[in-house]
Length: 267
Image (tube, rainbow, N blue to C red):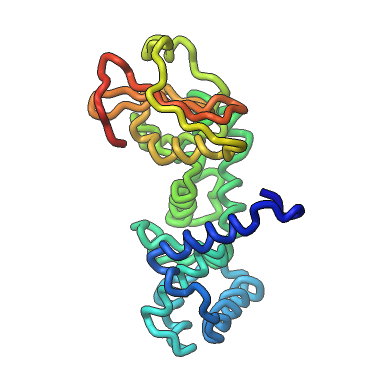
């Protein structure tokens, strides 16, 4: 696909339309003209950010702004989802911690995230590279309230950049900073390297570099202690061990199930 050479651009457009059509909130918006009142809300949020250096807005305050513009409750929810999808704001209605907070300055949030996730984690983790503790969160973000620090930590989870260490919930793993290879002694003690994959996902030309970061952030709660590295992880659920790997520079993701426990499983 190339924008410069106009290769497969129509394919991309059709896929975007297909995804939008299946979206539970935005499907009814395809082809409609954006109401002027919606634009007014976006302008007001930008003013709060640029002129008053405000980074977030409570859900009740957002609803009040919408009411002033004649936007009813249902439409305000659709607008909020639209702004989240387009990157104007961050809002996570399914998060118990963040469902009353609208982040109207995404850059501010991203800067705070990478204030926590820096090369120091790779060089000097608590027990190994890629680890950091809740104490680091409080130290690095000490100028913020404790609630705000925990909000930023929750954003890291929603962005699928970290997962809690299963055996120590006050320690977090940032997969992108993990070592390139597993601890061979721990790996050999847990896994028979002669076993063959039961699934191989092949990508024709490109694998996004964050594929394992996102996968590990979603399923890291099932990881075997200290058996994860930048390109792989050993999971355990219902007594079954599964090895998921994306070798560096490979176009394949492999899934291997421990033979002695092989049975169909769902994760």
